[in-house]
Image (cartoon, rainbow, N blue to C red; front, top):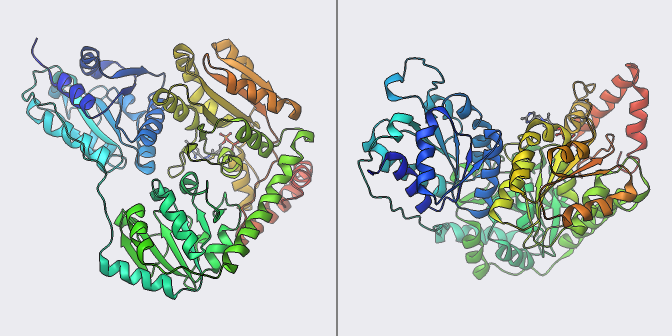
Length: 577
Ligand SMILES: Cc1ncc(C[n+]2csc(CCOP(=O)(O)OP(=O)(O)O)c2C)c(N)n1
C-alpha cells in the first residue's frame, strides 16, 4: 500500500519521541487517525473531553520534556483544544495539536464545522501549519515538531481529511531533535554582574521555572553570598528542597521571609523568573539583575539595572568561579528567622487540625505531604488548592508540583495527574481538586481513568463554593456573589462510576482516608474531603488595598444581613486575621 500523508505524520511524530496522542476521533479526523492505527507506535488515549486530553498532554510534556500529541476534529472538537493549548503555551509544554480540517474543496465556503485555523489558533500556537497539499507535509510536520520542542510550547497541524488520505509526496520521516543548547552572557556582561554583586552589602535571590536544572548552582551561589533564596510557585519545586537559604514564596500565595528578604536586600538577582505580580517585587530602592534564557522576560515585570540573556545553570556556574565570598550572614539569618516564625504560624491549623471540624485544608494538605512518597507528583487545581499545596507540601529532589500556574485555568489538576500517571506508571500522582474544578471537567473523564485502571488519587476540597473567588471578591471589597453551589456525595458518585470513593468528614479520619487512597493501586480514587469553606489564607505580606477590601466587604456583608458568615470567617481564622 502506498504511504499516505497521515502515515508520514505519525511516523515523524513517533520518531520525534511522541508516545501518546490524547483526543476524540470523528469526521475530518478519521483518515488522520486511521494512519495512527496503522502506525502502531503511538498510543491513542481516548478521552471524553478534548480539553481534558490537552491538560493531560501538558503535564506529560512538561514533566518529560518530550513532545506529546493531542487531536480534535474540525470545528467544535478543535475549539475544545484551545484552553489547554493556552495552558501549554504559558506553562512551556511541547504539545502538538493535530486539528481536523474540512476537505480542501470546502475551504472558505463556511461549510459545516469549518473554522479558520490561522485565526483561531493565533493566540495559543507558536506555529500553525495548514496542510492543504501533500507536497507541504514533511516541511510542516518538521517545523511543528521542532518549534514545539525547542521553543517549548504548542504548535498546530491543521489537516483536511482528503489530504491526510492522499499519497505522501516525500517519504523521508527521520527527524533530529537537538538537546538544549548552552546559553550564557558575554564575558563583559558577566564582569559587570560580578562587580555589582561584589559591591552589594546584601544580596537576595528570587528564582522561577528557569532554575529547573540549576538547583545545585543556585544553592552554592546563595551559600557564597549569604543570600536568602525566595521563589515563585513555578520555582518552588526546583529551589526549596535541600536549600539552607530557602525563605519561601512571595505573592498572593506567599509564605516565609521571601517578601521582606527581596525588599530589604541591596541587590536582587532574579533568576529564570517571569513572576507576574509586580506589586510583590521591590521598587527602585533595590538594585535588580535579571538573568533569563528568554529575552522577552527581561525587565517586563519590573525595571532592572542589568538584564542578561543566559540559562541560569550555565550563567550561575560561570559566576561561581569569580564572585567573592561574603562573610557577614546577619541579613540571611534575619530572614531565615522570619521564615521560621511564619512557619510556626502556618503550623497552627496543622497542629490544631485533628480537633477542628469542618476539616481545615491546611491540616489535610500537611497530612498528605507527610504520607506521600518521596517521588510523588502533586497537581493543584487553580483555586485554593494552590494555596494549600504551595504552603504545606514539602518539596524534595524527586517530588513534583505542577498546575496551571501561569495560565490559571480551573480544572487542570485531575487531567494533569492522569497524563503524569501515563508517563510515569506506578509513581504516586495526586490531584488536589476544587469541587468547582472537578465538576467542570474531571467528572466525565473519571470514566477514562476507570476504564484504563489508572491509579490517580483525586482529592476534592468539598467546600461547596468557588472559594478562591469568594476570597478574591472579599479582598476587592465586594460582597461574595455567584460562588456557592451544592454538591453530591462525591465518594458515592465515584463508586457508581467504578472508581474507589472515600468520604472524609471528620478530622480524625483524614490520615487513614488519605493513607487508604495512596495505597490503592487498582485504579482511580476519589477522596471527597468536606473542608471548611471559611478557611482564609492571607499572604505573608498583605497589600494595603487587600486589607481595605476585606474591611469593606465585611462591612457590606454585615449591613447586608450576613453577620453569621462574617462571624464564622473571623472565628475560624483567629490566628491569621
Ligand atoms: C476556566 C476558568 N473559569 C473561571 C476561572 C476563575 N476562577 C479562578 S479560581 C475559581 C474558583 C475555583 O473554585 P473551586 O474549583 O471550587 O476551588 P476552590 O477555590 O473552592 O478551592 C474561579 C471561578 C478560571 N480561573 N478558570
